[in-house]
Length: 321
Ligand SMILES: *Cc1c(COP(=O)(O)O)cnc(C)c1O
Image (cartoon, rainbow, N blue to C red; front, side, top):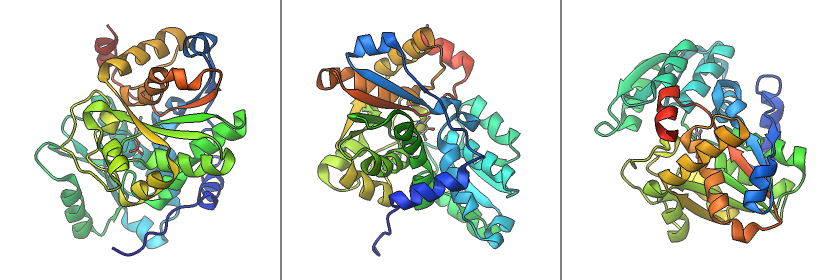
Protein backbone atom coordinates (compact mmCIF):
# COMPACT_ATOMS: atom_id res chain seq x y z
CA UNK A 1 0.00 0.00 0.00
CA UNK A 2 1.33 3.45 -0.88
CA UNK A 3 2.00 5.97 1.87
CA UNK A 4 -1.18 7.72 2.98
CA UNK A 5 -1.23 11.50 2.99
CA UNK A 6 -3.11 12.23 6.19
CA UNK A 7 -5.23 15.34 6.68
CA UNK A 8 -3.68 18.06 8.85
CA UNK A 9 -4.98 20.93 10.94
CA UNK A 10 -4.55 23.17 7.87
CA UNK A 11 -7.06 20.95 6.07
CA UNK A 12 -9.54 21.35 8.95
CA UNK A 13 -9.06 25.12 8.81
CA UNK A 14 -9.57 25.16 5.05
CA UNK A 15 -12.69 23.01 5.46
CA UNK A 16 -14.06 25.44 8.05
CA UNK A 17 -13.71 28.29 5.55
CA UNK A 18 -15.21 26.25 2.73
CA UNK A 19 -18.30 25.20 4.67
CA UNK A 20 -18.89 28.53 6.46
CA UNK A 21 -22.28 29.93 5.56
CA UNK A 22 -23.59 26.50 4.53
CA UNK A 23 -23.09 24.60 7.77
CA UNK A 24 -24.62 25.67 11.10
CA UNK A 25 -22.28 26.72 13.87
CA UNK A 26 -24.08 24.49 16.36
CA UNK A 27 -24.68 25.54 19.97
CA UNK A 28 -22.60 24.36 22.91
CA UNK A 29 -24.89 23.73 25.85
CA UNK A 30 -24.20 23.18 29.53
CA UNK A 31 -26.36 21.78 32.34
CA UNK A 32 -25.95 22.31 36.06
CA UNK A 33 -27.70 19.00 36.71
CA UNK A 34 -25.33 17.19 34.34
CA UNK A 35 -22.29 18.86 35.93
CA UNK A 36 -23.42 17.86 39.43
CA UNK A 37 -23.98 14.25 38.47
CA UNK A 38 -20.63 14.15 36.66
CA UNK A 39 -18.54 16.09 39.14
CA UNK A 40 -16.91 18.32 36.51
CA UNK A 41 -17.78 20.79 33.80
CA UNK A 42 -19.38 19.32 30.68
CA UNK A 43 -19.63 21.14 27.35
CA UNK A 44 -22.03 19.51 24.91
CA UNK A 45 -21.38 20.31 21.23
CA UNK A 46 -24.85 19.80 19.79
CA UNK A 47 -24.50 18.39 16.29
CA UNK A 48 -28.06 17.12 16.65
CA UNK A 49 -28.84 20.74 15.69
CA UNK A 50 -26.66 20.54 12.56
CA UNK A 51 -28.38 20.73 9.15
CA UNK A 52 -29.93 17.31 8.41
CA UNK A 53 -29.52 16.48 12.08
CA UNK A 54 -25.93 15.27 12.40
CA UNK A 55 -22.28 16.31 11.94
CA UNK A 56 -22.09 14.32 8.69
CA UNK A 57 -23.11 17.37 6.69
CA UNK A 58 -19.75 18.98 7.53
CA UNK A 59 -17.62 16.31 5.85
CA UNK A 60 -20.06 15.78 3.02
CA UNK A 61 -20.17 19.44 2.05
CA UNK A 62 -16.40 19.75 2.28
CA UNK A 63 -15.76 16.64 0.16
CA UNK A 64 -18.30 17.51 -2.53
CA UNK A 65 -17.04 21.10 -2.77
CA UNK A 66 -13.59 19.76 -3.62
CA UNK A 67 -14.68 17.63 -6.61
CA UNK A 68 -13.69 18.69 -10.12
CA UNK A 69 -16.39 20.14 -12.35
CA UNK A 70 -16.40 16.89 -14.40
CA UNK A 71 -16.95 14.84 -11.25
CA UNK A 72 -19.70 17.18 -10.09
CA UNK A 73 -21.46 16.89 -13.43
CA UNK A 74 -21.33 13.07 -13.51
CA UNK A 75 -22.59 12.74 -9.95
CA UNK A 76 -21.70 10.95 -6.73
CA UNK A 77 -22.61 7.72 -5.00
CA UNK A 78 -22.47 6.88 -1.30
CA UNK A 79 -23.39 3.98 0.97
CA UNK A 80 -24.69 4.63 4.45
CA UNK A 81 -26.93 3.43 7.23
CA UNK A 82 -28.41 6.88 7.26
CA UNK A 83 -26.75 10.12 8.28
CA UNK A 84 -23.94 10.07 5.73
CA UNK A 85 -26.63 9.49 3.12
CA UNK A 86 -28.56 12.54 4.23
CA UNK A 87 -25.39 14.59 4.48
CA UNK A 88 -24.37 13.72 0.93
CA UNK A 89 -27.90 14.16 -0.39
CA UNK A 90 -28.27 17.64 1.11
CA UNK A 91 -24.75 18.77 0.15
CA UNK A 92 -25.31 17.45 -3.39
CA UNK A 93 -28.60 19.29 -3.64
CA UNK A 94 -27.01 22.57 -2.53
CA UNK A 95 -24.09 22.10 -4.95
CA UNK A 96 -26.34 20.87 -7.83
CA UNK A 97 -24.68 17.45 -8.02
CA UNK A 98 -26.74 14.31 -8.81
CA UNK A 99 -26.53 11.83 -5.91
CA UNK A 100 -27.23 8.08 -5.67
CA UNK A 101 -27.36 6.54 -2.18
CA UNK A 102 -27.13 2.85 -1.23
CA UNK A 103 -29.08 2.26 1.98
CA UNK A 104 -29.66 -0.95 3.96
CA UNK A 105 -33.20 -2.38 4.02
CA UNK A 106 -33.37 -1.87 7.78
CA UNK A 107 -32.24 1.78 7.82
CA UNK A 108 -34.57 3.92 9.95
CA UNK A 109 -37.57 5.10 7.89
CA UNK A 110 -36.97 8.71 8.90
CA UNK A 111 -33.47 8.59 7.41
CA UNK A 112 -34.60 7.03 4.12
CA UNK A 113 -37.43 9.54 3.71
CA UNK A 114 -35.14 12.48 4.46
CA UNK A 115 -32.54 11.28 1.94
CA UNK A 116 -35.17 10.99 -0.78
CA UNK A 117 -36.56 14.35 0.30
CA UNK A 118 -33.21 15.98 -0.52
CA UNK A 119 -33.58 14.70 -4.06
CA UNK A 120 -31.19 11.73 -4.00
CA UNK A 121 -31.89 8.40 -5.73
CA UNK A 122 -32.03 5.70 -3.05
CA UNK A 123 -31.10 2.05 -3.81
CA UNK A 124 -31.76 -0.50 -1.01
CA UNK A 125 -29.67 -3.57 -0.09
CA UNK A 126 -29.46 -6.29 2.59
CA UNK A 127 -26.59 -5.38 4.88
CA UNK A 128 -26.39 -8.84 6.45
CA UNK A 129 -26.03 -10.55 3.03
CA UNK A 130 -24.63 -8.13 0.45
CA UNK A 131 -21.29 -6.32 0.48
CA UNK A 132 -22.20 -2.67 0.15
CA UNK A 133 -18.70 -1.68 -0.90
CA UNK A 134 -18.72 -4.11 -3.84
CA UNK A 135 -22.23 -3.02 -4.84
CA UNK A 136 -21.20 0.61 -4.68
CA UNK A 137 -18.12 0.05 -6.85
CA UNK A 138 -20.20 -1.76 -9.47
CA UNK A 139 -22.73 1.06 -9.72
CA UNK A 140 -20.00 3.71 -9.75
CA UNK A 141 -18.14 1.98 -12.58
CA UNK A 142 -21.32 1.47 -14.63
CA UNK A 143 -22.45 5.10 -14.29
CA UNK A 144 -19.19 7.06 -13.97
CA UNK A 145 -20.02 8.21 -10.45
CA UNK A 146 -17.52 9.32 -7.79
CA UNK A 147 -17.72 7.28 -4.58
CA UNK A 148 -17.85 9.39 -1.44
CA UNK A 149 -17.00 7.10 1.48
CA UNK A 150 -18.64 7.76 4.86
CA UNK A 151 -15.44 8.18 6.84
CA UNK A 152 -12.23 6.97 5.18
CA UNK A 153 -11.43 10.05 3.11
CA UNK A 154 -9.18 13.02 3.97
CA UNK A 155 -11.79 15.62 2.92
CA UNK A 156 -14.50 13.93 5.00
CA UNK A 157 -12.19 13.74 8.03
CA UNK A 158 -11.17 17.40 7.67
CA UNK A 159 -14.82 18.46 7.46
CA UNK A 160 -15.84 16.49 10.56
CA UNK A 161 -12.93 18.04 12.46
CA UNK A 162 -14.57 21.45 12.23
CA UNK A 163 -16.98 20.34 15.00
CA UNK A 164 -14.18 20.13 17.60
CA UNK A 165 -12.56 23.27 16.20
CA UNK A 166 -15.76 25.23 16.82
CA UNK A 167 -16.19 23.72 20.28
CA UNK A 168 -12.69 24.61 21.51
CA UNK A 169 -12.73 28.04 19.89
CA UNK A 170 -15.97 28.73 21.75
CA UNK A 171 -15.24 27.33 25.23
CA UNK A 172 -11.44 27.31 25.38
CA UNK A 173 -9.06 24.46 26.10
CA UNK A 174 -10.41 21.21 27.53
CA UNK A 175 -9.03 18.50 29.79
CA UNK A 176 -10.80 15.74 27.88
CA UNK A 177 -12.93 15.25 24.78
CA UNK A 178 -15.30 12.32 24.16
CA UNK A 179 -16.27 11.52 20.58
CA UNK A 180 -18.76 8.94 19.23
CA UNK A 181 -17.03 6.44 16.96
CA UNK A 182 -18.20 4.31 14.04
CA UNK A 183 -15.69 4.30 11.20
CA UNK A 184 -13.73 7.04 12.91
CA UNK A 185 -14.19 10.04 10.58
CA UNK A 186 -15.55 12.24 13.34
CA UNK A 187 -12.99 11.05 15.87
CA UNK A 188 -9.99 11.48 13.57
CA UNK A 189 -11.08 14.95 12.41
CA UNK A 190 -11.78 16.05 15.98
CA UNK A 191 -8.47 14.61 17.17
CA UNK A 192 -6.56 16.58 14.51
CA UNK A 193 -8.29 19.82 15.52
CA UNK A 194 -7.97 19.15 19.26
CA UNK A 195 -4.27 18.25 19.20
CA UNK A 196 -3.67 21.68 17.65
CA UNK A 197 -6.08 23.84 19.65
CA UNK A 198 -5.90 22.13 23.04
CA UNK A 199 -2.66 20.12 23.02
CA UNK A 200 -2.99 18.71 26.54
CA UNK A 201 -6.56 17.49 26.07
CA UNK A 202 -7.14 13.74 26.48
CA UNK A 203 -9.05 12.44 23.45
CA UNK A 204 -11.33 9.41 23.71
CA UNK A 205 -13.34 7.57 21.09
CA UNK A 206 -16.46 5.70 22.18
CA UNK A 207 -18.10 2.78 20.40
CA UNK A 208 -20.82 0.25 21.25
CA UNK A 209 -19.64 -2.74 23.31
CA UNK A 210 -21.20 -5.10 20.73
CA UNK A 211 -19.01 -3.58 18.02
CA UNK A 212 -15.67 -2.82 19.66
CA UNK A 213 -13.56 -3.27 16.53
CA UNK A 214 -11.88 0.11 16.97
CA UNK A 215 -10.91 -0.66 20.57
CA UNK A 216 -9.44 -3.99 19.42
CA UNK A 217 -7.66 -2.29 16.51
CA UNK A 218 -6.28 0.45 18.75
CA UNK A 219 -4.90 -2.07 21.23
CA UNK A 220 -3.51 -4.49 18.64
CA UNK A 221 -2.05 -1.83 16.38
CA UNK A 222 -3.79 -3.13 13.26
CA UNK A 223 -7.26 -2.80 11.75
CA UNK A 224 -9.57 -5.51 13.12
CA UNK A 225 -12.66 -6.54 11.12
CA UNK A 226 -15.85 -7.75 12.84
CA UNK A 227 -19.34 -8.83 11.70
CA UNK A 228 -22.03 -6.15 11.60
CA UNK A 229 -22.72 -5.62 15.32
CA UNK A 230 -26.26 -5.73 16.73
CA UNK A 231 -26.72 -2.52 18.69
CA UNK A 232 -29.24 0.31 18.88
CA UNK A 233 -26.38 2.65 17.88
CA UNK A 234 -27.13 2.31 14.15
CA UNK A 235 -24.60 5.02 13.22
CA UNK A 236 -21.80 2.94 14.74
CA UNK A 237 -22.52 -0.47 13.18
CA UNK A 238 -19.34 -0.26 11.15
CA UNK A 239 -17.24 -3.40 10.75
CA UNK A 240 -13.81 -1.79 10.69
CA UNK A 241 -11.90 1.48 10.80
CA UNK A 242 -10.53 2.91 7.56
CA UNK A 243 -6.88 3.24 6.59
CA UNK A 244 -6.90 7.00 7.07
CA UNK A 245 -8.98 7.01 10.23
CA UNK A 246 -6.93 4.25 11.84
CA UNK A 247 -3.66 6.04 11.04
CA UNK A 248 -4.91 9.23 12.69
CA UNK A 249 -6.56 7.52 15.67
CA UNK A 250 -3.52 5.37 16.39
CA UNK A 251 -1.35 8.49 16.82
CA UNK A 252 -3.68 11.11 18.24
CA UNK A 253 -6.25 9.33 20.43
CA UNK A 254 -5.58 8.39 24.06
CA UNK A 255 -8.00 5.49 24.38
CA UNK A 256 -11.21 3.95 23.12
CA UNK A 257 -14.08 3.14 25.48
CA UNK A 258 -17.17 1.01 24.95
CA UNK A 259 -20.70 1.33 26.32
CA UNK A 260 -23.75 -0.93 26.37
CA UNK A 261 -27.14 -0.23 24.79
CA UNK A 262 -28.54 0.19 28.34
CA UNK A 263 -26.08 2.99 29.01
CA UNK A 264 -27.11 4.65 25.74
CA UNK A 265 -30.80 4.49 26.68
CA UNK A 266 -30.03 5.97 30.08
CA UNK A 267 -28.36 8.98 28.45
CA UNK A 268 -31.11 9.33 25.80
CA UNK A 269 -33.54 9.74 28.66
CA UNK A 270 -31.31 12.21 30.45
CA UNK A 271 -30.85 14.30 27.32
CA UNK A 272 -34.61 14.39 26.75
CA UNK A 273 -35.81 14.82 30.33
CA UNK A 274 -33.15 17.04 31.82
CA UNK A 275 -31.60 18.83 28.86
CA UNK A 276 -34.65 18.94 26.57
CA UNK A 277 -32.83 17.60 23.52
CA UNK A 278 -33.48 14.59 21.30
CA UNK A 279 -30.32 12.60 20.68
CA UNK A 280 -30.18 9.43 18.59
CA UNK A 281 -28.69 6.31 20.23
CA UNK A 282 -25.30 6.68 18.49
CA UNK A 283 -25.15 10.30 19.60
CA UNK A 284 -25.33 9.15 23.24
CA UNK A 285 -22.07 7.13 23.11
CA UNK A 286 -19.76 9.98 24.12
CA UNK A 287 -21.74 11.10 27.17
CA UNK A 288 -22.39 7.53 28.36
CA UNK A 289 -18.65 6.77 28.40
CA UNK A 290 -17.72 10.06 30.08
CA UNK A 291 -20.20 9.35 32.86
CA UNK A 292 -19.00 5.77 33.29
CA UNK A 293 -15.42 7.03 33.77
CA UNK A 294 -16.27 10.15 35.75
CA UNK A 295 -13.90 9.32 38.63
CA UNK A 296 -10.97 10.20 36.35
CA UNK A 297 -12.42 13.59 35.47
CA UNK A 298 -13.52 15.18 38.74
CA UNK A 299 -13.29 18.96 38.52
CA UNK A 300 -12.20 18.74 34.86
CA UNK A 301 -13.47 20.53 31.76
CA UNK A 302 -14.81 17.87 29.43
CA UNK A 303 -16.15 18.22 25.89
CA UNK A 304 -18.89 15.89 24.69
CA UNK A 305 -19.58 15.67 20.97
CA UNK A 306 -23.31 15.01 20.60
CA UNK A 307 -23.11 13.59 17.10
CA UNK A 308 -26.72 13.53 15.90
CA UNK A 309 -30.43 13.52 16.61
CA UNK A 310 -32.04 11.50 13.84
CA UNK A 311 -34.30 8.88 15.37
CA UNK A 312 -37.85 7.80 14.47
CA UNK A 313 -40.11 9.24 17.15
CA UNK A 314 -41.85 5.84 17.65
CA UNK A 315 -38.49 4.13 18.01
CA UNK A 316 -37.38 6.81 20.43
CA UNK A 317 -40.55 6.35 22.51
CA UNK A 318 -40.00 2.55 22.58
CA UNK A 319 -36.41 2.91 23.72
CA UNK A 320 -37.07 5.37 26.52
CA UNK A 321 -40.29 3.82 27.88
C1 LIG B 1 -21.86 8.49 11.42
C2 LIG B 1 -22.20 8.78 12.82
C3 LIG B 1 -21.32 8.47 13.86
C4 LIG B 1 -19.99 7.78 13.62
O1 LIG B 1 -19.16 8.58 12.83
P1 LIG B 1 -17.84 7.97 12.14
O2 LIG B 1 -17.23 9.12 11.45
O3 LIG B 1 -18.27 6.87 11.24
O4 LIG B 1 -17.02 7.45 13.26
C5 LIG B 1 -21.68 8.82 15.14
N1 LIG B 1 -22.86 9.41 15.40
C6 LIG B 1 -23.74 9.72 14.43
C7 LIG B 1 -25.02 10.36 14.79
C8 LIG B 1 -23.43 9.41 13.10
O5 LIG B 1 -24.30 9.73 12.15
